[in-house]
Length: 310
Image (spheres, rainbow, N blue to C red):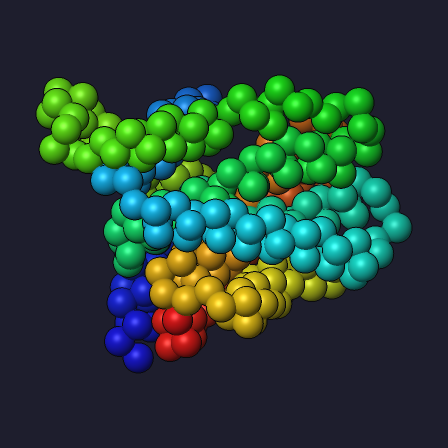
């Protein structure tokens, strides 16, 4: 119960920030251009700072082994996601089917999982979550592009490796291997990184709130395939990941971080890719929005259950 209440409190804080973004959109303080600029700031500066900050610590062989296990767990989880999505989703319209399958495979582990993990587990939780973010980026810019576009020519190895998340992880590993702790970094360098990382909760949550204001919940509640996809993303997938990783011997903070990433709602870039490749953008907005709202309830339950066995 303590674990549930702690997580629920953090999710409630995030929900208030989401509602703020929703309100700012409704009273026209937020607009598309402003939110796009905020999104770019989070993508290119805030999230990378959170990742880099988590790697600023003394080198430890055991931690390195745990990171390696997290990478293996994240890769295994995404393989399960892909197989499940292709086996279950049978919508006859490709523009819908690709969005539904993408929604099952890709979770919002950056916007939703990172702020939550930083709040309940600190830097250690963020450190292990970087494995999911790395695998997410690699698969999103390869398989994900092919899935949404329906054409292999759009797959870009360059984008797989050269993007804000992967660059931040690479910098982080260099700092970790060089055993660069906070005490070894001048305050004039460390403090800007720290201050930018503090924005990782308020900015993404208000951005999500803005997108919520655009959603058509009446329409999605009559869409059986969409509701099934959301249930798989929020309930089935984290339960499967918890079971598989537990049986593989993963425990503690590493297990909790992995399951929180798996329990995150539909990835925000579902809409970005759907729009770019002329697929069902309205469906993608509704999927991201509704799954985010429902995750406010599902994530605390899943995290509490994970903490019981971790």
